[in-house]
Length: 169
Image 1 (cartoon, rainbow, N blue to C red):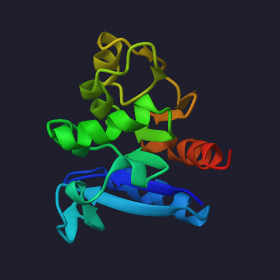
Image 2 (cartoon, rainbow, N blue to C red):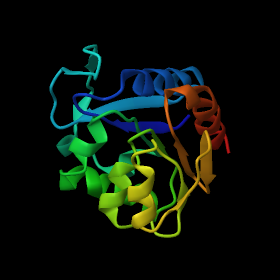
Image 3 (cartoon, one colour):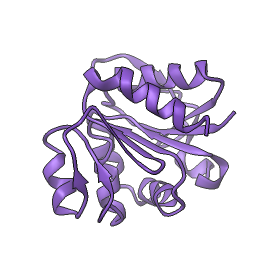
């Protein structure tokens, strides 16, 4: 069983949160939803409430084995907060399992660690990753060691399969 951190805030794309979290829990992993503070809930992009387990100031990346970053407008907000950038940086530097879908890889750009990494994202984020030095592929799921990225909600079944497989290694 792995401990998986999920970084989110308001306007996250709900299905990119709920489906991978359900898949991870079904596979027996412990999931902790982390946001800006210990607020009880956040609101997703479509108005659904998501329960937050803890705030970013109450955890450290070494408490977790893996990190999930769902898309929507959440990653763009989180990347302006250095605490989330540093948290994400830990997983990139240590090559620990790191999963991001849709706009999730926006958070990687702030780390300065995407150069030479192979990944995908939502179409509008792909040029940003490319200009930051990433090798960008337009495929449902791209796996680069323990880094798993995906493009859109349509890719969620393949994304879920890939992230649960990485954690069974």
